[in-house]
Length: 99
Length: 485
Image: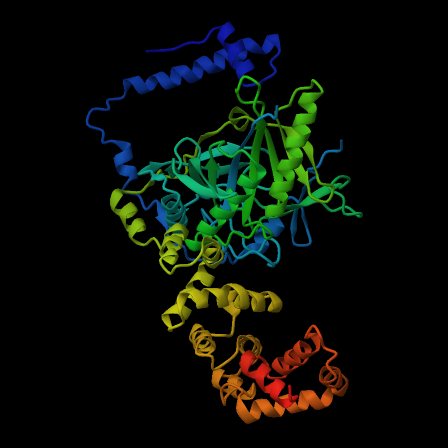
């Protein structure tokens, strides 16, 4: 069944997501959400007859690895690619905010 | 009327694995150069995928079994979002909706009363990295930027979440102590609070007059057993003062400041919705089938309370059992001494009093103790057979613990190899003492020692010189004879 959102639901969704939205942006956001819902509705056209249970397949995955240490040999790459590095540390914007 | 205290604890234990929870980086990070135990997975490089450490699942399950939890056949990981640089991904992978173990309980004993603390659940999660805030004066505030070391980021943790069943700081401290003991018995974690491998967050509230729960406050940054007790005592007093003055308690997280002895407001308490938990789609669910759980159960070592029960059969007192079973290694040492032939009660006394004294003096633990259980058993047997006095036995233990010397050589060096001092040997000592104390002897002979203090003084000197190897009665009689009394 196809779902749609109206202006009121769009505003409620924005509020729930703590998004600030200007009145002139509401229409565009509503259209975007409805486009996404239209796309999701395509799932309804799929023929899923006989598709095996996904969780059954998950259980067959090698979901755990042995506890064997291995060094990463290209550590200097991190240093060169990091936005900022000082000494042996990654440098980030200050965390502690004054009073 | 005092308001009832309600305390629940969240205890994080770093698991004794070799590698991190989702990558093959080593967990051995103490003292390592920052950012050397890292790889694209724990640094959240795009395109990488986490893969769960098998040992972490086994250790968390073992802890769960030890805590009488139900090990879940099926558990999942989620993402706990928070924007903080100690995790490179900006979220923590943790178990949320379906943890690895649920329920369970831990028994504690405070002031002779046994209490059951129920557990809510136990889950797996990854540790965060460490932040350094460089300031010239060492303060937390004032730094222009922060530095991150991700060596600890991704180290496996298990978090044990209790129900709010504790009603005093002493109970909370005892609970953490018993939990740590269990983790150590099971080889799940070293449980060192000082190095951060055991961390405790406490939720505390004071009940309302109608019995309903009050507003709870979370306390963090308690880095020792003493600080758990102090922080909670302070917080109880603070909350009581606020309520007494007509104020209300704010739901918040407070940090314990050990130096100042106070808790300080850190931030308003987050709720689950603040973290926007959602399923970790990069990890398959953790499936532990019944045969694997059975295998974990089969491999369980003896638990502390099982050991306590067994030790009770030796006829030991409750206090002796408590001390001897506190550490698994000490308990094993004691058992080995008994197995080597020492009488259980005497062996308990020696381990509890003398071995612990020597360990304390040397600043080591039992694993570094030089005296093998067989040697201590022989020593105890010699003292029991009166081949050695208690005093000399203790001296020999001191020597054995400090030098590379056999028991036979230590006994020989002590001069006790000929057995007890008696007859001529004892006479020789008495003569030495008598001639060294002419004034005392004269006082006695003149009949001025009415209360017998002087003769007792000389007897004491004889026993000291004989290092306890003489029979006190024989020594007293020989001394009297020597003084013509």
